[in-house]
Image (cartoon, rainbow, N blue to C red; front, top):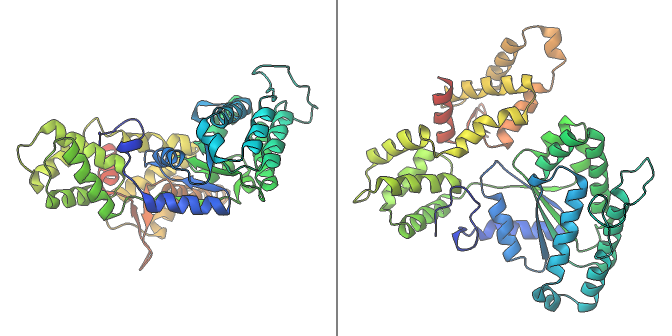
Length: 398
């Protein structure tokens, strides 16, 4: 198993998560799924694993982070389906007649601004709507178990809004919702992922009802047993000496079992090259000097920088103050503390009343995106979701 700090871990480098993959496939048999979680927590690796082992589905993997138009998304859906339908494995697995019909019909689709004849559309409809509806009819008629794995869907919506308009986003969301409704009794499924909250993006555009019927699955950190297994595999395959006690101490130091953090820790140990298993003090020094204060930890850097992408200017200022307060309180803080922070930032009561849901929105987003977690007992205090992110925040804000 190779260390993968940058690209997603795939194939033999992906630490298998059979329970999570089985949960996603069960949910997909029932309907469409929004698979959400913070950036760099393994969502794309899970999509690659489903693509490699899709069960009864014909998988089509799409990365929408590179697209900023609806036409480009449709083009990729059509092109990738064409490629997969031509593969011998697909032809042997599904009814040949249905597959031939699907392939023959999608080859006739001409998309606007991509090739073929430009399609005249009514002024009330975007130019891509007619070929999109035709694509939908083909999928419904052929009724094959096609699974569209749509990576970074919320980012795509933000890019479309920036390049085109909010109205364009509303149009594609309405079409996508109608598509899911029309295909509800067919075998076609959509799984969308997002490193930024899908609901937060559509909320900011005033379009939340367009995505409220997805079955939401949030990616969890590895269990302790899984995390220890991954650590031991990485250490063994990369010539790093770590005993069981050391591995458990690494998990304690990090405070969150995300695969990327375990990869980073082992990479630092590989660079230091201990002759024998490092002691707890040596591991603590590695954690403090090379992870919290080092340059390789792009996970925490990304979490720090992305606040301005997730929030408006005033929300971002509130989020930074909330996180700063939580970083200084290892045992967590309560709701009243957050309200005092909000009151300090927006002291004028009438103005604050116009922002009634700002605090709730910020807190919900910080919890959803992996910054904070709320205890479920006692005073339900809120604290950082990981030790490393808390310690990193202390360094950045002190």
